Amino acid sequence: MAIRVDLDKRLYDRRMSLTELADRVGVTIANLSILKTGKARAIRFSTLEALCRELDCQPGELLVFVPGPLNEEVD
Image (tube, rainbow, N blue to C red; front, side):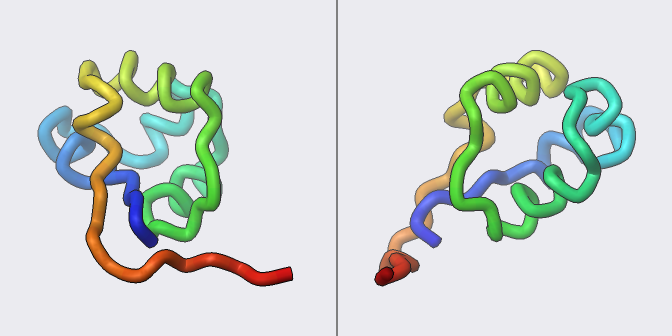
């Protein structure tokens, strides 16, 4: 995947659990886990905004570009 959502460092810096973040943002733990493990295909701006608000960070601190081949699906 070319873009990764990097939650681990932010959660560690804030001494916050994934469960607490899920409660604060209003997203299920399962969906946050999908973001955290790089299996997400998309993220809503409203979710990104809520994550940034609760983690006190900028979008660029959560979204990381990982060079390499793209994982594109062919229909």
